[in-house]
Amino acid sequence: EGIRPGRIGEEGDDAVLLRAHRLVLSSQSPVFKAMLSSGMAEAESGEVSMEDTTAEAMGVFLRFIYGANVDDQLTATNTEDVYHLASK
Image 1 (cartoon, rainbow, N blue to C red):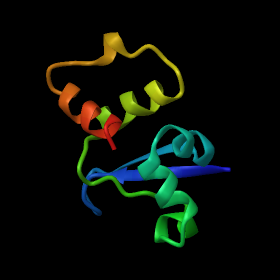
Image 2: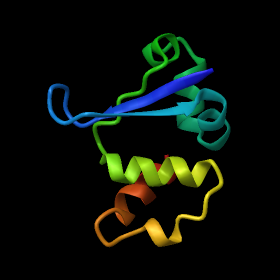
Image 3: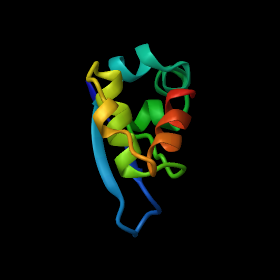
Image 4: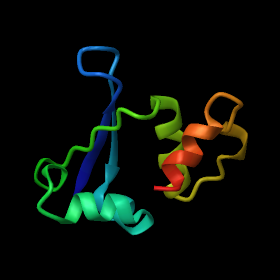
């Protein structure tokens, strides 16, 4: 089953919707696993809002957890955000 890992940005702004598989996110991140398998709102709705990152960083993070080499996609502006996502 797929989930929508978040509307990146504040509601009403230029929020971006990205899709990913619940199983992939849960297997790669204990934080996502807890959010998506517990009684939390994210588990019920299948949507995780990520207001503390950018759409660019989340896209790189998703490609990384799906197994892609993202070395050429890391930039001076997104590396810190991608690292923050990866350390969750």
